[in-house]
Structure formats: C-alpha cells, structure tokens
Image (tube, rainbow, N blue to C red; front, side):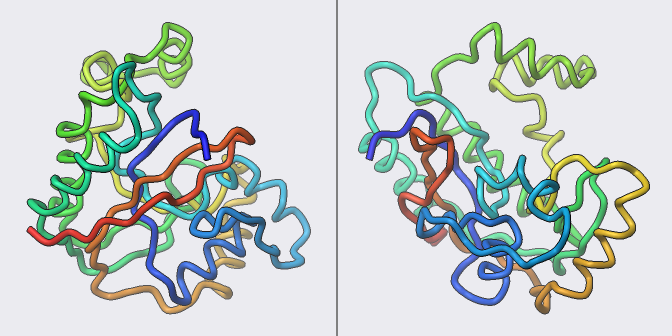
Length: 223
C-alpha cells in the first residue's frame, strides 16, 4: 500500500470503546474498512469530517515524508522511540464540547499524555517534509496567537507542545444549538469510559489514496 501522508495516533485497543468509535464515525481505522453507522438522522453528515481519520487521538499530526526517507526508516525510528517512552495515564475520559466539536477529553493531569505527544512531534520531525505555503495559509485561517504561529513555523502545526490538547474526536463542527442534542445522544450510546485512562501504545497510520487513514503498526510504550 502506498500512502500520501503519515501520522502518529493513539488508536484505542480492541474492545467496546474502539468498536463504538468505528461504528459511530463509519470508518474502522484498524481494519481499513467501512463500518456500519447507527441509523440516526444526521449522523452521517456530522461525522463526515472526522470519518476519514477514524477514531483516534492525534499525537503527531499528518505529514508528508521528507525526500530521502522511506516508511521503513520511519517505522524503525518509532520503534526505537517507543522503547524509551513510559506509558501515560490520567484519571479518565469525559465527553466534552471542544469548541463546536464533541470529543472525549482527558480528566485529571494531562502532563503525561503531553509528554508522549511532545516526544512524537520532536523526535520524529526529521521525517516531516516542510509544510507548503498553502498548508500554512490554511492553518492561519483559524486566527493563531503569536505562540501558535511560532509552533506552526517550527513544527508544521500550531497545536503542539504546550498548545496540545489530547482528544478523540466524535463529530465535525456543529451548530451551537445542536451540541446539546448530540451530546445527549452520545451519552446514551457511549460504552463505559476507561477510568483511569492509560495510553500504553502509539500507532503509525497512513493516508491512503482515497484520503482515508488506516493503521500500519502499533508500538507498545515500554520505557
């Protein structure tokens, strides 16, 4: 399989949460296949944006591979990094509005999760092809702070390092008046959320020619 971009994601392990996320979004990132969504009016539309990525938490945002490197070089570097990283833990996950999106976000101290994400961004950045002017302009449309602009220029993405906020996305951008409705629907359908939440692996994922992401390999954090 040839991939246009790569990313380092947290992909929940096999179990009720992973099954729910795949079904809710309509895409199974682990198996690289369509998943049947619940028959809820409007669900297909509100999940259209996150569907291509599958159910995941971003650690290193999608990037094109720099010339002179191949996926095996990247995989080797991830494996070596994972051997030095300890698992990360927080009190649990909560369903929360994140701006006008709905997502599962950490409860309690997020510093351990940020530690893993920072390592992914920093230690693997030598494999990232610089962002194009078009990509930079698209990121700036959100209205970045001076610090976010500096992060964008250094790392190709503005919401990394201290600006990072771990989340597992469950919707696209919603009308404000629709957020309570979809939050209630999700409350009724979510499986029991992990408490504590433990991130003990990271995943190399690739963007296929059709724009969908799929899992390439998991790496256990054993540092």
